Amino acid sequence: MGAQQRHPMKGRRDTIKIEFLSNKEQHSYTPGDEIIGYAWVKMSEFLIPGCVEIALRGRSRVENDAILQPIRTYRQHNFLEMQQLVEVDAFTSYEVVENGFLYKFPFTFTVPDQLPIHACRHQEEQLSFHNTHLNLPPTMGIVQDGTKGLQSRSLCPENLSIAYAVEIKLKDEKAGFPHSKEPWNFAARQITIIPLSEIISSSKILQGSFFNQPRPYPPPLYQKHARLDSLHIETLTENPVSIYLPTNPIENSIKDITTIIPLRVCYNRKHRGPMPRLNKISRNLIAHTTLSDIQDRALKHGKPRPKNHHLYTSRLTLPSFNMSAQSKNTMEESRGSHYEAMLQVPVSLSPDLKLEPSFESCLFSRSYTLELCIFYRLAGRMNSYSTLLKVPLEIKITR
Image 1 (cartoon, helix red, strand yellow):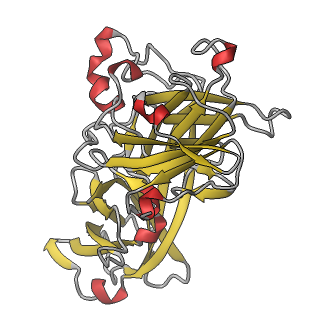
Image 2: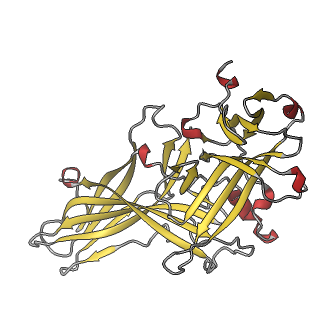
Image 3: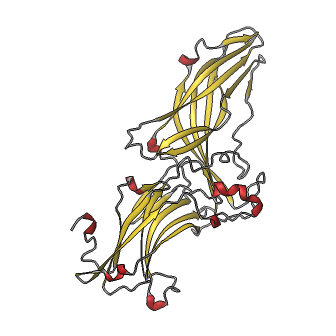
């Protein structure tokens, strides 16, 4: 008997095992991929048609804050359900094994490009949100796969999980199937689903006010000094900076993904004296996760977020960038006492970080901001000064 015909549950009683046939890394799938496998069911009695349910489900779970509420509660929402038709012939092609009968139920699911139309329940005048809200959310949070904990992605709040799983339920026909709600046997295996960049609508991800997220384009920051000199630093990108991460960096032999962010440094000098010296840039990647335990049907663009929405911020510190070599002798006089310098700031992300892509849905959203803190020194001063610049980012996943 070949590898696909093996008996994984011989010697057990009334057990279910789910077996995947694909060679996907850690069972990670993207839209359009097929999830192929078998459900091995070993029973001490015969199974009859109609008592086996095989489905692919997407489920979100939001737990309450244990500090504010002593009893740990949660809200769960099923946003995706795809049923597998179980052929009647599968109930007659059993195999007699020790202490029972072994059944083999094949299943095939194709990861959809979008959620069903009823997954977004906004009012008719808000149809512009549907294209964004019907995109599949990525697997997030810590989910359970049998006895092992599987952390699918990083920078996710501890009280949130978005999980996909193939589930097998055996329902008791004697209890009035299909009206019996509780299965008398159940098994599930987690999978990871990662939406691709061409499916995510990037035009609304960082437009800000829908969930009252931080403004992606902050006003220019000016640093005033005692001599009335001014230093102004700005980015030269009009749109959010896109960073593309591969779905399988190990297979593609990719180490770090680097994106260059151009900066313009403007210095207006009112009195004679040396110009400021740029030292370094500290870089922080900020992940903004908006989550809700209730789906709102009347969200309107530009309104404050509802009370049941919560914004969580996670910070990832990146290595600092030394600017002394790059900025030396680059300040050029453009007119009178106005000086400018162009800087190229690299931002490198390791694929091992496993960042979720930017997305937005009815219940959840994820956006990113790159926080640049520019340090510099003034002539005759011992202290180091700094100014803060925030750059909106979009994380996208490609094949």
